[in-house]
Amino acid sequence: MDAEELIRGRKLLIVDDEEDVLEELIELLDMCKIDTATTFEDGKTQLEEGKYDLAVLDIMGVKGFELLEIAKKKKVPALMLTAHSLTEESLKRSAEEGAAYFAPKEEMGNIHLFVADVIEARDKKTNSWIKWFDRFATFYDRRFHGTNWREQEKKFWDKMVRGTSGT
Image (cartoon, rainbow, N blue to C red):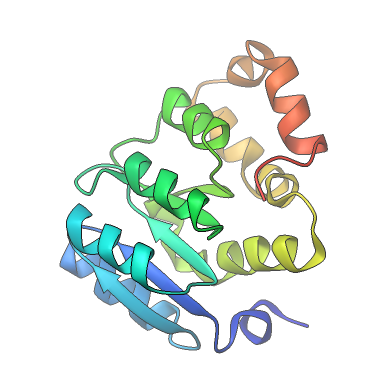
């Protein structure tokens, strides 16, 4: 089954304070049922009251880590999508706090693949960070200037990409 088939009809919440990002994501994920929010408050309300297969959360501008906490309590997997918080610290914090994925906005054109990675991992009860690592390890090696980001936290990242956390 390809990525689009896998996510067709899935209900997503996308929270981002940038209208143009929301519009692009709606277009890229047109095979899904999508609710959107542009503020933390609206995102919080929708997460608490709605039922979602996945939440796509910006970090900056909408208190993404606070929304991640709510999503986790509601058992909604969260895909963190960021441009301004594309740091080693935010990556590790996302993983530690229960995000299922951490993607850069510059790769947004492939969002359907990232959503499918998370949905597939949840459906199969596997670890979504394994697919994330396959897709993004070299991207983050370049972004963070080498592999030190992994070596400095070797035990943590080994557990994330081999263990069962992050789903």
